[in-house]
Image 1: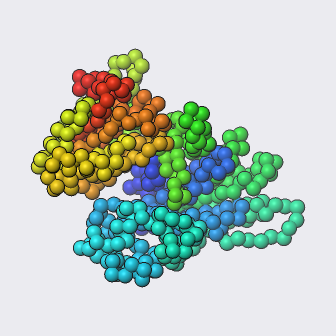
Image 2: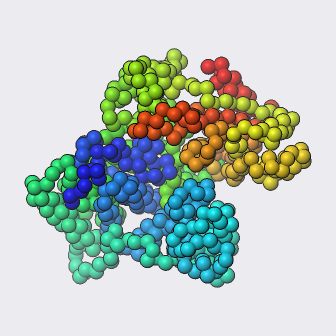
Image 3: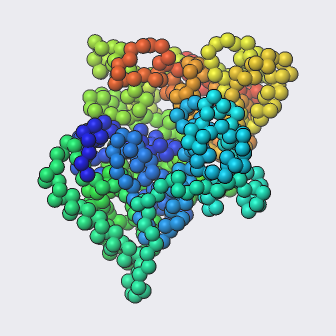
Length: 595
């Protein structure tokens, strides 16, 4: 496929899949072989394996969709392909459509005016317009931005009053039974989401001693080999700088569980991987646990499994990156969850937030290379400092950004140096809490005040503000987000904070953010969070990292210093000084301020 020169791979540092938590495991995204060239000679191969029903196929489909979306945004027009060996074509289509619908649900929940086309629900579900009538402000393709706050659809989506059911491919009210006819709202117009060419239709073969899965495998293998042979001929006459031999943005082959062990180990999988890397930018093979004993020329290996916490009697899924030959990755097991829309959400480990696994020497080496993306926050800060300090050497800038700890347990680990843009406070009494509410109410500072509530309801907080006879306008200054109760991990709690800060930095016009975590005295309501001793320093570390500049355009070298840095004030509320968590927070804050 011949491409325009400005559509080549030379501007792609890493492919961001936009899967929550997944890109963080690779410090920004997946790196291709021969990075930095206009046209990579081969693609990236990922092997996903693990126990049954853990979400391997769901993760593979998300990666496929993410890679395809990213490449299309970069102007590289290739097609994705998902091939299954165990007959789930209709189910696969429903999963893919569910991911697409969930994308528009997420867009609709973003702040007003943050995206050009706020939502497509009138187009996806034609019955909505008829059902809700004059309370929908849309022409079927684009929302009326002047009336978005009044649109009934956006209100329902933002308050999670409606839910998409992928089996019936329709939306229902969140409360009530899916089978209840009165709970039904509108059906999906599946023609609005194009899945042509991604999945194969179910095929039938004459029954004999050879399994259907094996016949499908041989057919798919032949197609891949034919594509490679065809490209080898045309490659002689093509311009290397403006052409690519890739036929697919992402190629997934799933369903190897259909083979017994003897069949599986006889398949020519090593040769298949080599061929797939010639025809697809990213290729993914999905296996069960038997893949642990198999050898491939793969670049990335991901292991998934089910785990059980005996203390809390809680079962959950987790994954780890076993191998990443082309780039650094975050080690260890990371919890993950299959969401309602069939997507996989990953929560990087608390310890990955605390540790920076690189040394000053290797960091200097990486900064001198074009492929630095590790960690992303350091790269962005370095690029900013280099632009405004044109006469300063790279190593001098690096020494100003990095700080090596002398502690024996942390020897050789390099951290980002603390900056003046993060303030950490502790509120320990009801009186101090009321005083803080008063300061928020009467403050005219350009600040967003966000309460992350632990065991406290928004209704209770606002009632307390009313009892203090604070101005009603002050109630509009605060944002509340409840974490719910019970089984929430520390990893998930950190992801909530990080995701919120990044969304706020992207869409808010204000420069000051005040995060109040209220009330840590209720931590006992969260058994999975309470036993994680590194939770509080990890929260501080995330906020410290997120105080880096925002909105700076390195490419255009915009030196305007306004609106570059984000000031974050982090307030821990623990109104029970007798609690062990209070003593822990107080000690950490004291050490943070002293350092």
